[in-house]
Length: 122
Image (cartoon, rainbow, N blue to C red; front, side, top):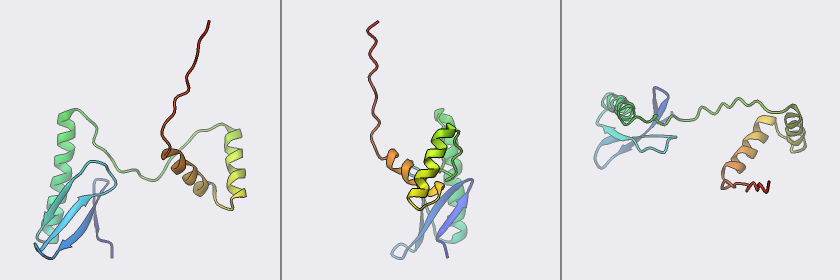
């Protein structure tokens, strides 16, 4: 059994708090903090929906886009020679291109961005 609930592309954790006798929820996979609770599953679900609707309305009122969880699907257009090299690298590592690319992207995402200085002496 999964202790999660889904609404409009968002997923909320469901944790029972025995001391307060409530179900506590938090929206997962986004940096913004959205939390709520309910005394029953029905109330929890209603409050989850209200929290998401409030988040979407607040984002719109502030003129900013609401954060959305990543789907895990990425479509890339890359040069054929880069694609071929990545296929070979994945084969050498004994993994699929998807798993190899996931590792490469994960490693690159954890590195701080560096800028290359361009000098124009002309």
